[in-house]
Image 1 (cartoon, rainbow, N blue to C red):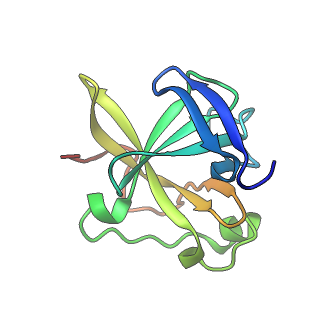
Image 2: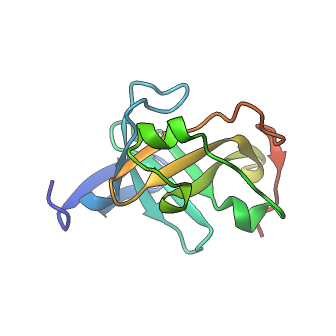
Length: 146
């Protein structure tokens, strides 16, 4: 697909979408629990610290992703070099780091998975969810999105 080409997607959560092809991120290993799904579109929200990750192939699958540095005071993480290398990256500063947000309480986001951040290289359009081996953070870290 050409960079400026528009792609039509259906999303159960977000409705019909028309997105640029260069917003489609390929996850070579899929995501945990969804290994067979590889292509996801980044869909902007009205906030700089949140973005939707919509499956290209499964309209029912949409994740809310959040900027961990905006949500969690003092958040620090070192992405293992092997995970960066699997994406063709050499430095984590070259990648977007986001967290999967869970909506658990009446549809309101209440926790984020800090132990398994999603790393996205927008230039290469590659993504990977990284499971941190010795993370001091948990999979259900309480958050508040105002």
